[in-house]
Length: 166
Image 1: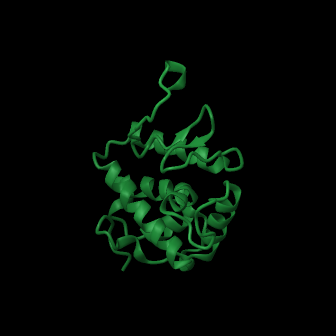
Image 2: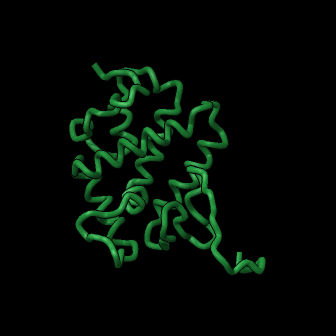
Image 3: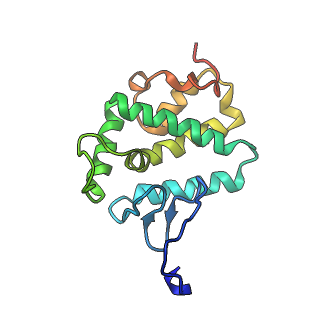
């Protein structure tokens, strides 16, 4: 905006699938714009997310993203599965420290950034008509998240968007 001569407060509404500025490698969702040079998986996840939105025939991709975001945030707070917790901790350590935040309890914005690649992976799964009603959805989610199926919490059905595993 400064390039256009606007130097005051600018309010920007960002759709769920435009969370990254690829030109400047910055996270745009939330209050802080974090540098993503140390987190290439966030940049790749954003490209997959944009492709999902562009190519999806599912009219409710935003709802699928919201559901996936809720699930990954709940997993983050419950500290399961351990393999994902280690990834998320590494990502949180890679971004700048929150000077005003509690280092042991990240803000919602930081949680969304840390869990973003897994959120996008689940979004693709939920948006797929092929996988939506399958009984092996839990195993496919584990495969896409690169974790053991038995380590993955069984709450993929908690929001009513996917078929039960049993």
